[in-house]
Length: 332
Image (cartoon, rainbow, N blue to C red; front, side, top):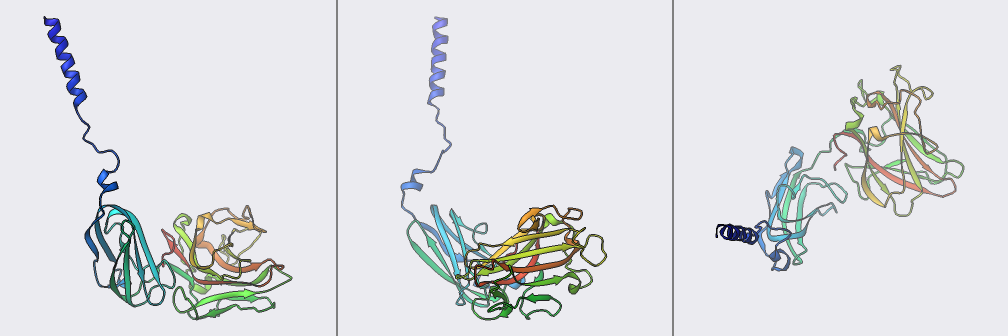
């Protein structure tokens, strides 16, 4: 009898354990998949006016009964546009912050913007207005913004080819400020169309003032390849004066470079970390001639060369806001 009682107790315990349910939810709720979609809190903004020049932001909010794809599109009469998007139950200070930056150029200017919320789950759209009273000021150390034309301190060379256009422009879409630089032309005997040298000593006693950390430094520019011309190459060279004698000696000091080519049409921010630059010989990576260390504090000259295959015909590219930033790529 005792043995039988122990056996029944064991079976009862096993049965009770097998009947216990795991209350933790695995995967999405059925209501999230098949239930009706509802907006629990309407689309709203933390402020109706914002001064981005003072570091102010706009926080957009909304809440739904289940996760959904959403997109906020902020537009200005000038054509500026910022897009925020995600998939969530809620739009909040984590996902819905606008800091004055731009997705589609030009950069935002003062005036009223329209913010629209598009929700994939029910194809609905909500809108509200936000007034910009101060525009965002870009970060970084500016090498050239072209707002005042070509600085006489820069050294510029332009070939005597056909339809040469190494000039500043203030028409059309201007991504930042009041002007950009137009490099174009046709040279049928040489790859070089023209160049600009930006020498450190023309920027003051500290040169470009970039510090010593190449891992924390980004080189940036805003660039536009016109729709009809995809044969141009922008070559940036960074020549370091390692011995501090005030000159760059190619045979014994480092030169780092990067080629920018095969761009899609339209304005965009292009960035590269300084430590990722390499020496190029005829477009191929090669060992630099100096100490083989990236020393941004020793940059003597930054050269911007515009190149194209001489058999490819006319070439053109637009450039604006050449600048260094620390910690992250340029945000406009």
